[in-house]
Length: 326
Length: 270
Image 1 (tube, rainbow over the protein chains, first blue to last red):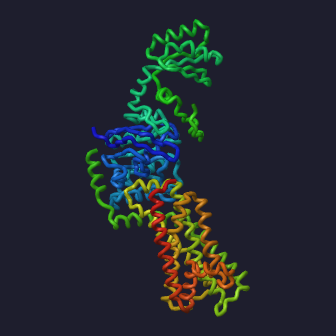
Image 2: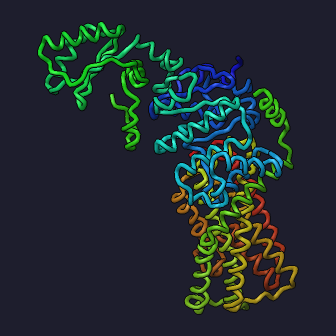
Image 3: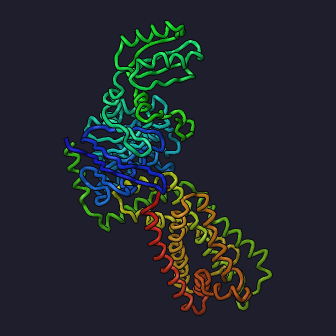
């Protein structure tokens, strides 16, 4: 397989802030790569480098073998960009937006008209196509935004947080569209704060934190880094929480974390059932009353926490708080 | 997949010809014109101020101003025509700042279109809006007693000079919009030409009535020479001296701000 996107030691600073710190990865043709990380991790900066909107301080990035700095215009004709920062014109109709983008991709008039109609139908916007975008719902706007990025039939799509702020149903619709495009051979790089999204759509995942790549691999590979499973203990009384954590600490192969709101202790473990039984016995012998005890496969949240020492903090982000809690 | 890639690479290798660049600018201009037509209050909003100044100076202040050898209304109204396009330029900086804030500029910059097209399409659409606004202000001027006394050719040349002036200044306003990036700040900054160029000019009162330190600036700045050229073109009288100065100012302003704004656009981010 050949690489559709190559990122090689790309760094970018804004004043004293290091937005990207020697980031490297490749995306194979026809696959989906998810850039996963909290707000401020450098995801959007990287997308802006790949879409030729931002010149990196050092390193190289190539799309389809072309250098983002030397062959910027060639790359612009090969990529589609959609997401939180690219946008559509509120005062134009959906169709006018798409036809304008088609014209600016330098397609013939007949071709961009046909493609605009096809894109409207595909994104279930045919009936709203001749209404001004200001009458559209949030989900319709995102679909139109995605439709606009498809007008040039680009072999490479860059989606910057394509579903942030959407309700679950609209998000599922959008995932469906993205999966269809991938089935047709499009290469996709998407950024997301949602573990679930990365797991659902991506062949491989690059975890970014404060501008650095802290992990990469498939979702399963990342989970295997934790060495197997997670032991989940829920104590009956909050007062027992710390005692429970120290009682089971020896069974784990990494530090445990407690979640006081849920009276919960989470511990990465290598084995399965034998640890479960031993831990249960230890807790019982010391008189810790339990609500729940179990093992599960680690989620990407567990992985992110284990790698970076903090969570992706999507709740704080949704509440408009961009600080990363430790 | 391979087919898609090959097809795209071929179209990509097609160089950006002047013809394609012009087509891009046309597409952007059409988009901007649609936006203007769908927000008519924008056009009317920008003519309210010139109309009010016209009425105030024609009926309230003008009685106290005596210009030898000319009716005050014929002295005042050409200045109001120019003010209409000067203030109309504020829409250029506002619209560009809005496009930056909305992310439209990001989208345009990620497309294989000509870089110059966004600004050329913007200034062209705003020139069209200026023509429309000017028609309303001319109608009001005639209603309050202004008359064209010169030949048709000279009067049309005067109107062409107003449009040229507005076009040149729209590049100045484009620069402001790209530099300040924020729509509200852009609107505030767009008032500056009113106070720096329009009031200290021959627009409302003759320059000899101003303090001596202000007169050299007031006599040679672009608004004064353009208004004096307009009065000569509409009313008759010697025109050459003011006309070539006015045209030189327009060309100079156009060229300087063309270069500055294209450079700003290249680096523009919200």
